[in-house]
Length: 330
Image (cartoon, rainbow, N blue to C red; front, side, top):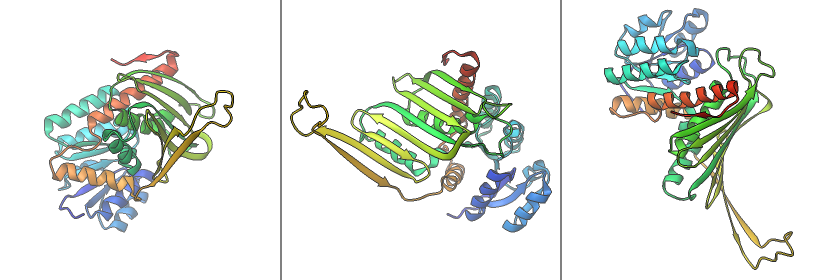
């Protein structure tokens, strides 16, 4: 994929380094900005691009788009500065710390004709595309519920948000994407077991206007990494593995007469189809989608409005944990 587009990265922590690598592989990286020169300058030299200690200097260059991979608290100001400078923006999730800032950002991008994409990376995972396409083609039957589990040990890199806005936001976004229906209400439980500042475990129940139910289990407490989501449909039960990029599609049927006096030997035949998808790096897919939205005058897979709506649900979940009540979405 070759483009004349020039992009820059603002913030080169653990995620920013990967954004820089992918942009370099795509041949579009032109600059890196981070206040930590000891980390950022060697990275810029490695990729043969310019280093900027101040991102505003990069915005004054001929770069056409930036990726913001800074702590969440800085997203709004950097993104607004970029929009005012006429640069397209891909901002890591969550889009902003508050809904007010997110909505302001979305409107500013729309008014300026700027592409604003949000780094909800799991939407770019091949298993999510497989599920969405299959649902739209009616291959699974009507959805009853969608359940996700995303658990692991505490990541030292996170210091500005809790587990819901770090991990849970991924599955809340994917469930919204697959359900294709507005969230009607949110009820969540959670707390702090090993983190004094933010919640480190949560369970979130989503009620959609379509009647679909969503459930997310998320924590920083489990000594192993799990990234899975399952979809219960009227015709199939589907299990997706984000990390393996595979899917198991299960169905069953009664193969004989049912003897109610012998429920141990039920005449049920199960069919399980294992689907291994072509391996793709979701981050690469995310950036290719961003570039295509810019060069093709299209819309990114995860728009600023998408990021705002997912943030709205996450904020409702946090409010539910705090108040101990079900939150109705407006």
